[in-house]
Image (cartoon, rainbow, N blue to C red; front, side):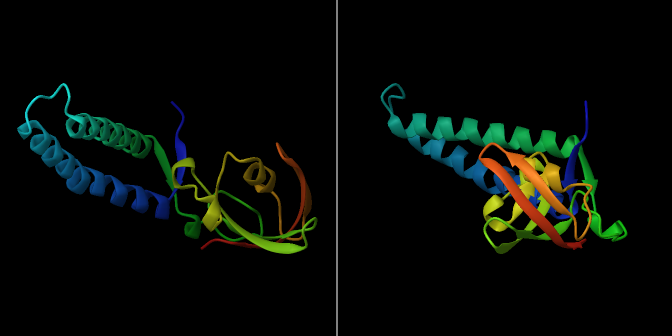
Amino acid sequence: MSRTPLTKQGEILIKEKLSNLKFVERPKISEAIAEARAHGDLKENAEYHAAKELQGLIEAKIGEMESALANAQVIDVKEIPETGRVVFGSTIKIYDVDNDKEITYKIVGNLESDPENGDISIDTPIAQGLVGKFVDDEIKIETPSGNLNFEILEVKHI
């Protein structure tokens, strides 16, 4: 099985979320199930069925996170010398030629991806198009929504 890349910050964040699910959310659900059971007939008990469904979702999320951490290759980008080349974990400031604006992205693993905050998955077309390029490179990236034209202004390992 191949290893999944994960930034050091992503590993810490996932461990915190996993701990919260295991030691805060899981006990809350167990209490809700016990309380719903106390109300009697389980066949027509909506609270019980909702709590059981939520329990299943939480257990699935816990399993997904544990599996991801077990198969993760944690990369601390701060340990990689800055050469101006875009690598996994880099924070990149680019100029969007078509829209005349600057954008900052950080290339991260799938589980830590948060596009609204500029954290894009290594598997996205934009990240794939940026990796391996250097500061001052002008690039054209094909995406499902059309071609994008960027100039790389800055690459940092933060």
